[in-house]
Length: 168
Ligand SMILES: [Fe+2]
Ligand SMILES: [Fe+2]
Image 1: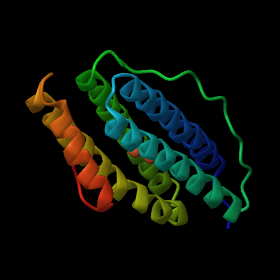
Image 2: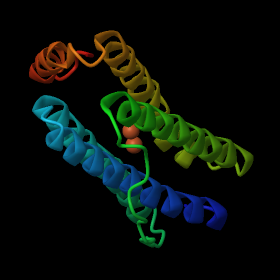
Image 3: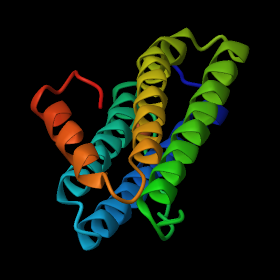
């Protein structure tokens, strides 16, 4: 099975996109820690680990189909880290951007009749629906909490972390 070169290139790019998302989540986690929001910090560290797993999943796929893996440079973290709402808004923007990247990849796989890659990407399509929904909920929650009820958000996120499938 030969994966078309433009798709291999795009998948290699996506590995770096996922690792960059991990990098951003790590920076967000550090900022939450500095703000004294330790539970949110831990949750964002976990998100960072998940993004690394996403990158690795793509890397594994390329190895499985016998394609070359090329690890691109990861740029510095981006995003507005000034306050909790801005951090989560940046995280949501990132998830929406990654969703678009995944959808572009799916469209490309279909265009090339690369059904193996199309099938591989289905997991990512579903994952992005989940991630955007979760981040949207967290953003709403933080907006409702304002500056004075952030510890309530922490308590809810802590509960969510005890039951991995639960949302905030
Ligand atoms: Fe991801
Ligand atoms: Fe994500």
